[in-house]
Length: 423
Image (cartoon, rainbow, N blue to C red):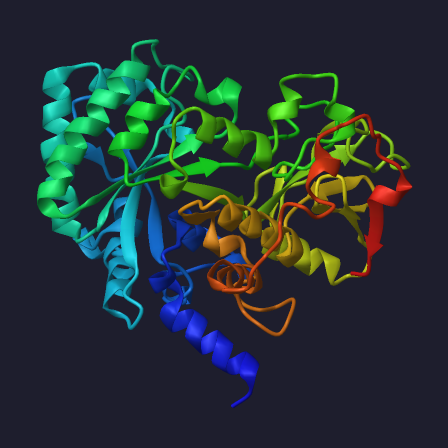
C-alpha cells in the first residue's frame, strides 16, 4: 500500500477527530434534475462530510414547521422519504451528523418575522421544532433566515432573533440537539440583521456565507463571487471592498464571534455573466447581465461545477488564474464565470485553519462533479477540500505573497496578475 493511499485512509477515519467540521448542504430539489445532474441521496458518499444539512423546510406563521415537498421529503403516501434516507447516513462507519436547514433564499422573512417577535408563537415553534427533529431523527436545526430585518422583515427582527435562538437552544440542550445558523457575510448585510455577540454565545456553529458576493443582479461589471481578497477595480468603493472572504471573516471576528464557532462557507458552483464586450474579460469589465442557464441547475446567472467542467471538456473555454484575488475564472464567447477549483479552495481552507475557524461549509454537494465525469474521481472538490482541511501539514498562509500584496496598497492589476491555465 503506497503512502498516498495510507494518507487518504487516515484522513477519512481520523479527520473529524482533528476537531474541524465539514458541513455539506444537500439541495433536495436536485432529485428532479435531468441527465448527469440527476442526484439522489444514494449518490452521497457518507464519509465526505462531518455534517450533512437537508435543504430546506419552511416556517409557518402560526409557529409550525412546513414540509415544503412532502412527496420528496417524507414517506407518507408513498413518498421518497429523503429525510429518512439522509438520516440513515448516521448508521454508516463515519456516522456523520445530519441536520435539517430551515429557510433559504426563497423563504424571505415574512413568516420568520411573525414568529420571532411574538413570545407565544416562539414557544409554539420551539415545541414543534423539538418534536419534528425527534420524529425524523435529525441531529439539529440549521437556521438559514435570509435575512432578519430585511427582505420583508422588521427592525425588531434583530432582537427577536436572539430571543428565538435562545429559547430554541434551551430546549435543544435538553435533547442533545445542535443549533446552527448560516448568516450573511458582509458588514453591510450582517449589521442590520444580527446582534453578533449574542447569537455567537447561543449557536453551536455559525456558517458565514462568503459567496454570492458579486452577481449579475448586483453588479454591472463582471467579478468573482467568492474571492479571497478585494480587487483593485473595487478600490474606490467602500461597499465593494467588503465583498471578499478576508474582509467578511475579519468583520465577524472583530464583531464578537469567536473563531471556534465560525465556519467558512464555500461554493461548489460559479456565478456567470454575459460579457458586454467579448474582448474585455478581466474582472471589472462591463457585464450585459447574467450568463445562460445550465442544463441541470436551470437558472440564469450560475453554473454548478459539474456543469462547468463538462463545458470545459469541449475545449472551447479559456481558464485564467486571477492572482490578485486568488481565484480562477473562465470564458467562452460572451459567457464568463468566476468559480472555485481545488487550488482556490485549498487557499481558502488554509486561511480558515490559520485563523482557527471551526471548519468549512459547502453549498451544495450535488453541484460537485459527483459522477466523476470530468476526471478520475467522483466529488473532486469535496475530496480535495477534505484532505486539505484535515492535513497536519504546517501551512504558512500569511507571510507569503498572498498576504500584504492583496491589501490594495496602491498596486493595480496588470497582466502579471493573470495566468492562463490549460483546460
